[in-house]
Length: 103
Image (cartoon, rainbow, N blue to C red; front, side, top):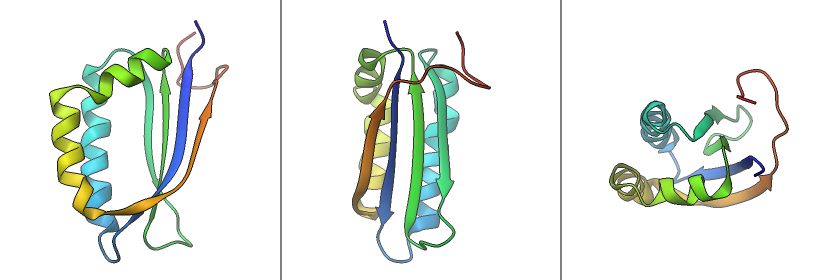
């Protein structure tokens, strides 16, 4: 089964990027307990003051879907929703490998 990758740009409500990024960083730390999540990276875009870029790599697409149903994930989504203005880009991809990824 192929690995599943998801990358995208999230736009925070004006002035709320740092607060939203903090919640996403909590989510990233929580991924240590989710063995099927290989990479969860939260990045700021220096030229876009309200934008956050997220890159995820999962063992497969089903593992990603299952993670969205976790109670902890749902709680973080509920906390983050009021801080999100929208989503600018979302790209699904098939990661082949690289530093930090399992075979």
